Length: 363
Image (cartoon, rainbow, N blue to C red; front, side, top):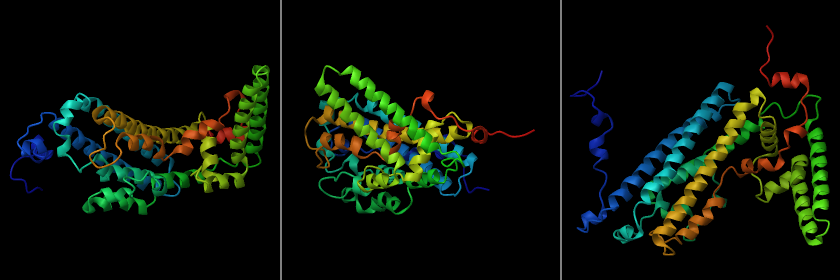
């Protein structure tokens, strides 16, 4: 039953009367009529609608990943939500193309009317970052203050509350740590893997020696890089070294989770690991999309206001440029490629293990 006095229509279902009455240009209110302010408002309102949808998807993912263990079919559901987020973020990035049809001179017609508001005050975007797993200590300070200081007091809880709950990073770390295939019974995979790594690095050293035999400076530089790579690999095999890297802030995943993520990436072709591999890949794609959005935003700000201070008082493009890399959440997954081996060097799995990873069953 419903208490409607008239049939549901397209407009009433979408609340179009209220929605289309939400665009209130400051220039029109003050009698200045800057034509492109409407585009500016509509684009940013659309951002916020998409952010609302991303938060809706993230809440569903967090609920799925909070269960221990996560059922295989539910991993697929979480993956579908994550893939939707990636698609939404591509649309969000694409909207910058529309906004850039506005020229800097057109923007100047109403820019001064926007102060002290700023896109930095999007509580929903901060909530997205926090639900993904952004660490407060890794955030760049905004105007030398904590990020929430820029938010209206009535909106702060929306951004801050996710800081006090397990994030997607936390849930993924726990899920990876429970993966059952890191230890293969009597098969010492990590010993075999280490042998292959050492053989690969020895081969690289030979190639470097031949290539730069007549250039001592280049030889020394290349060998120094190779030694740095060897130290990187040491953290895979030595838990104490890995722990030092985490303590120094160079890693976030626990050692168990890192090994599982590496195993998934190395044996992504095994049927049972294909969905987990796709999930890890989509997490990287989300991080990459957010970095690209920040970069495109920075480029747009540079185009529109040059080196001027932002409307919110920040250093404008300089602040945005620094967030591109500093605000990544899943950097550990980005860096997994450092530890991959060519398929020709990948240790073969015992038949019994390969059968388990292949969804084998008896008739």
